[in-house]
Image 1 (tube, rainbow, N blue to C red):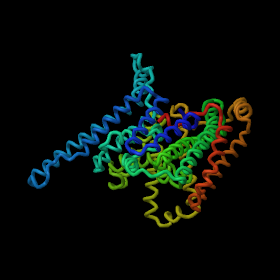
Image 2: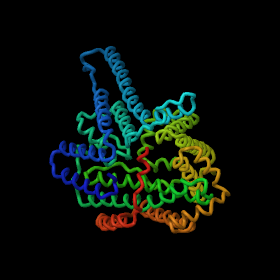
Image 3: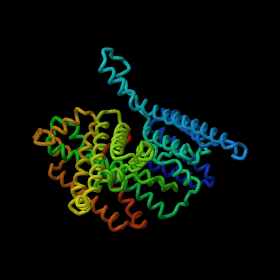
Image 4: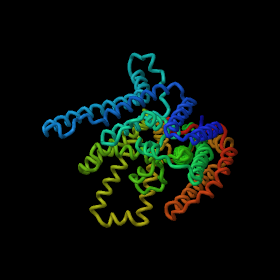
Length: 496
């Protein structure tokens, strides 16, 4: 069942009708859980038992981490109290380690065991027969595991553990965010489950508007751009330098529109159930530094990396050298999280290096007032933006082509490679029916539209009111239905 489909629309209407017809909150949670299982079953039925078992394990570990078996202070002396507390803290630490280990082991097993076995098989004299098999990972396993780890760590740090399995299961399996996020902390949704907001015209309008805008981003824009990206990156030997540059920038737009479109639909769906999911994008391509980019791109992943990796490693509290090392470690792990191919590791290391350079530049600017003032002036801001976006867009080459042989070929041919004239005929004339120049102008027009939207939203703080948003919902859906390419492309982040 795809988000952009008539089946999903009918499914959503049916679930909403049942959900809001029930008065008891617990029954609503059961409806959410049953609907989420049905949604996941339409995509990947075989992994539902495994995910339910993982949910139960994390629920029980959370209960164990959250309990306080120590006696009252009045019944024991100070020494006994200290020893008991130290012993319990040690046990809690072991429980947390066990929980994190189980979740990480599951993630590594599904996403990295098969590539590792294939690598070993190809590089040893004994070619094992099972190394050629490919393990299909459960959809959304990376997001699923990160949420479980965040929950266990939060409980370990003092947040209350869930005492209702149905509430925890409904949170973990909630179909709107299940496959590709946004990564949501348990307590963020649990509080909303307990204090469910009533459905208003403004909320319905905002929810439908987000779904409609998400459908336009994905079905109307990202999928059309993706056709060119697939044609170009699928024929690297024949594409010219200009083709590769266009494909690089096109993929940057496709990735943003595809992923942010998914999140818009997820957040809009949640709003119709009276729930608010966290935002995941904040105009990332207008960032003027790589640090700002990671505060605006995939914001819930950035928040997770900061709270559960960067800060425990010491953050920026242990000197500049240690800060730079921590940044590099975090981004390498972020790259590995996205996939087992070496290209993802290089992508993460590249972003880590960029963050290190930014941190060193910031430290240097603090010592020289003129340099600090330069980065705040219009020319400095523009240069910062230009360098940041050039770095970000070129890094997407490893993201799109994680096989280092392919991505290396792209970098080698970004300058002065003429390409194949027959390739241009096949792509621009026969497949797309537009010229190379027209495609570049369309990408530029898209960038201008994004700039206008950014200006109105961030600079003027202007948005449509809910009646106007509701008015545009039907035209948006109709445009997607009529103009979207046949056979929509799968969401990019479904692979992660």
